[in-house]
Image (tube, rainbow, N blue to C red; front, top):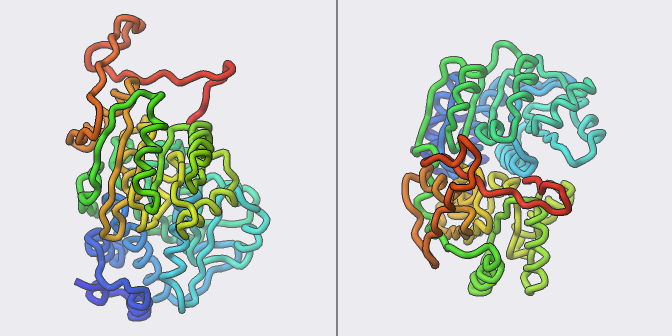
Length: 409
């Protein structure tokens, strides 16, 4: 099947062909026809499979077919994303799809001038990509209204739940047009997702092209059991063996990511970092440098787990294992994109064994051991009453520095 057979407007198909996009992915093949028929859609697919086009192309088709223009301070379609990086990636893709048409695409995220965004919304936009927090700021300033928004997309909705955006969604949704089409896309399906589906989707079609939480088949995964003090040396050893390749390294905390970046820089690697303490400009420059190849190693917290779509990322390192197992799937999904293959290496310290067990539970498989041997479980004898029972989930203790708890990204 090709895009012609999906019923998209000829101008859209021609635009895709100009970009070398001719064959829809499975999630696009299954979701686009339902979306074009006006159905609410819940799409489940692993990262890197083309979810943006799966919701973006039918939205563009509907707006192009209508031929009308947005009123001032309105948006005809709204796409919500949990992070600035993901929002930027979505907007970039949508702009490439609407090229040559009268449709406009705008993005509103935190970390950049809100006054410029207010000015951009003054004329109204066809498609608005936003992070929930900044959108609420603009609504409160009466810079945008959503009563004429008839299309809503929640992208990476599971991460929105994990980041606490459910309250923002409850504020935003009632402001939209009552008659609207809603689409929800995600790579994993936590139990709380049912709450979102029941609240915002009406009789949705569920499209699932892979088991939720399933990692890409063409990612070679392995785990290295290494003491926390030995992680840096092991990482440098591996990075030195493929200096010409792009590598994305995930750390758990903002301070940890910045410290690791400086250590790699001193070791002679072309590196940069992105995390919550960086300004939007710094984050954008780091990603652009990584895309161009000027930066070969990018150290990041989970702000980058879903916002980087760079086919040339050959390696992903889980320097720190994520404390949310599903984030592992999103992290390693930054490699093996666009049909390529990639490698994902996880470093597991003794106090991360519980995290590793949770990851393998999500994957429904054991990671191949690259070096070392599994650490023995810590004895629960010192656990508080009611804690540490057999089978209970044990969490590594957060490190304290100067009496203050280091916060995650």
